[in-house]
Structures are given as structure tokens and as C-alpha cells.
Image: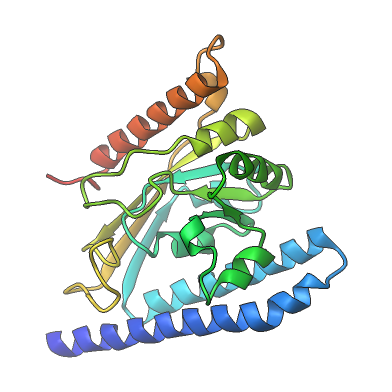
Length: 263
């Protein structure tokens, strides 16, 4: 039964990746050109974001249903449509599938996308139609994120910039999210991500399937305010550095407390 289970999960994973890529390409080639002539920007973005949310939510549900992954989520209400206000989600990034899981939990989400991925042939149209934010220019990144927050979209940011180097260590956080929080006044929602056993990490290819279904855990912590983390007399640059250090330490401490960072 063990080899059969492994090959079943391998095939299911391959089909999921294929569906993700094909649907992304179809969306870019068909839906996005139609969206470009839609007369109302707000309703266009709202519809596109809703379609993306429905698709990734179905994809995650299928992965859980067929036994590829298990998923436990705590505190997800803060990510939902009935949350008091849009927030900046700041999460660690152990695996590629983190963004898919967070998008499935967040109906009104806007992602920060690495500039290197902005021309991805499968998803370039999706990212543009949903008005995702590129991190290519730091100033434009902060201003674009603040605009999306003002329009009611929760920003999803992985401040490591790429997947974590190992399971028990993170890359140093970049300060863009802190500048965005200080400029917009939006709360910061620290989110802990864990994948056990590791899957889709920096050093793994899609076909490196773990010996059993991987278990994704998502813990949404209590929101924090950037202006309460920084001193009143700090310059914007120094305040952003203070907030970044505080959030990085906060997430690291809770990753240890929850047992997600293991010796």
C-alpha cells in the first residue's frame, strides 16, 4: 500500500500543477483581454479577485480530498470578507504552496509578486488583471500597496522575498511591508506557516513527494499596529526598520513556541 499511496499522490500532484498552469494560461489569454475592455475598474478587479479565490479554494479542497495534503487553519476569520478592515498579512514562506493556501483563505486578496515572476508566461495576465503589486520599485511598491489597502484588499506579503532557506531558519525580512503599514495605517497580521514533512521547498522540485501527505498549518496571530511598534520621534526610515525587526522577532518567537521551528 505504501508504494501505491506514493504514486497516487505523485500523479495527483502532477495533475494539480498541470491544472494550475493550464487554467492560469487560459485565464491570461482569454479572460484578461476581455477584462481589459471592462469599463469599470473597481468591479473588474472585484470579479477577477473573486474568480482567483474560487479557483484556488477549489484546488486546495481537491488536494485535501485526494490525500495529497492536510490543512489546519486557526484564526482565519481575520482574513475573511467580514474582517473589520483590510490588513497587511506578513507570513513566513517555507513552501511554494503558501501563497495558494493564503489566497484560498482570503476572499479579497492582493499579492506582492517578485519582479522576476512578473513576466511568467502562465500567470502574467492573471497578475495584471487582479492588479497584484510588483516589488521591482520600492517606492511604487509601497504606494501601490497602500492604494489596494484603501480599496479594501488585504495585502499578502512574504517579506523574506523567497522561500525560506531551511525549515528552521528564515531569510532576513525586507522593510517594504513596514513602510506600507506606516503610510497606510493598516494593521499587520502576522501569519505562521508550517509544512510537515517539507514539500515544495526551495531545494525541492515538484516531483519530490514526501513519504506521506504533507500537513499544512496556518496560524493567524493577533493584529499589530506599526505606529505602536515604532517610537514617535523616529524618522520614517528608522521607524520602518524598528517595525520590521519587531515583526520578524515576533514571528520567529511564535514559530518556536508553536513547534514549527524544530531542533
